[in-house]
Length: 599
Image (tube, rainbow, N blue to C red; front, side, top):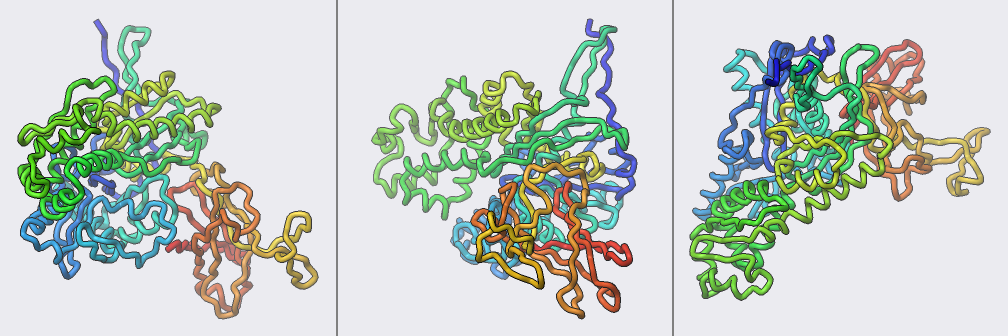
C-alpha cells in the first residue's frame, strides 16, 4: 500500500508581484505554431497551473496552437491567420489567383541574427515573392492573437483591454534589435507599452516547470510526496522549438530579502538556428530528389494544400521515431502529386523511384502510398538531433563547475522520441524531465511570468555593452592615430567604454555606470549617445572588427535642460529581458527614463 498522497510543494509568491493587472494574457509567437493563454490574478494565487488556452481559428488536434501563417489581400489588408490563412491561400492557388494575395508562413525567423534589421524592412511573400512591410506582417499577426485572446477574456471575465497585462515571448538568443522590433509590432497591434512585457522563452518554460510536480519520493511515514523543483536544484533548460534552440541554466534558491523561492540564471543563453523545421527540410529535399525539381515546383505553387497536408503527416510521424524504430512509415500520397509526376516524367512514380539507386529498398511507392524504411526516417532526424545534443554537451562540459543535475526539455520538437532518447544517452548522469505537452510550457510559463515577474532575480549578460568615449592615452597599448590632445590632456579616441560585460551576472533591474554627460548644445531637448556591443569581454576600441554599433540611447531632458546645471549621470539597467537606461539630473536628483533605439 503506497499510503497517503501529498500535494506538490507550495511555492511562496512575491506579494508585490500580485499587485498588478486583474488578468495576464500571453502570446507565444512561434516559428511553426503560435498560441495565446490567460489567467486571472485570483486563479494564479490559488492554483498557478490553472491557465486557460485560447481557442484559435483552425487549431488542430496536433496542438492547441495554430500555424504561424498570415494572409493579406492585394490592398495589403489582413484576411486570416493560422490554419484558416493556409486554407484560404490554398484555395487561391487552386484557382490560380495567388498573385493578388500576400501569404506568409513561418516568418518569425526573419528577425533572427539580422544585422540590417530596421523598421522599414520588407519581407517577401510565399510563392510570389511580392514584398510588403515586415513590421505590418508581424503587427497584424500579433493583433489577431491579441484580439482573439481579448474576446475570450471578455467572454469569461467581462474585462477590458486596460485590465490585462500582455506577455509576448521571444527566444533568449535574439539580440536587442529583434526584441525591440517585436515590442513595436505589439504596440502597433494595440497593446499599450506599459501593459506589455517580453518574456524569454526558456525562462517562461523554467517558471512553468518550477511549479510542475515531477519527483516522486516516499517519506518516513510511508506516504508519497510529489515534489517540484527544490531549492539548490541546478537545471539546464533545453528549449527546442521549430526555428531555434535556446539553452539556458538556472538555479532554484531562496531569496534572502523576500524569503521566497526564486530562480537565477547561471549562464548566458546559448543556442542557434537548429529547430524542428530543419528536419522538415531534410524530408522536403528527399521529395525533391524523388519527384524532380520541376514536379516539386508545380506542387508547391499549384497543389500547395496537398503538399502541406503531406508535411503535416510528417510532422506527427517524425516525433514518434526512436533510435530503436524498425517499422516502415507509410504516407498517403495525394493523387495530384502522383498524376503530376506521371504527366511530366512519363512514368508511374512506383516505377520511377526504383531507378533512384540512393533510395532503392529504402523508399517504395504502391499506388497512392509511399513507404519509408525506419532507418531513412532516422536519417531525416539524425543530423539535427546529433547537433542539438553535441552542442548541449559541449556547453555542459564547459560549465562542469555548475554541477547541473537536471535537464528540462521543452518546446514543440522536444516531443520527438528520438531527440529525447539521444538526450538520455548523452546525459546519463542527469535527470531528464520532459513535461507533458512540452510545446505548451513556454506559453503557460509566460502567463506565470506576467503574474510574478520578480521570480527570476539574476540574469547573465549575453554581450559586452558600452559607448564610444575618450579615455587616457596609453602609448604601449593605443596606436598613434587614436591620440588626441584636448586642452592639457592626452586622450585616446574611439575607446570602448564598458557598461556591462559578457557573462557578467546582474540582479534584476540593476543600474550600473557612473558616467556624466552634458548636452551638446544649450537648447538640446535630449541626450543622444551611441551604443556598441561585442562578444569580447575586454574590447579596446568601438571600431574593431568584433564590435557592432547597436544603435543609440535617448534621454529626454524636458524642462531640466533650460536654466539649470546640465550634468546628467547615465546608467544602463541590466538583469531584465530588455536592456534599460536611466539618467539622473545631478543637481536635483531627478531620475529620467531613457529609451534605446536599435532600429
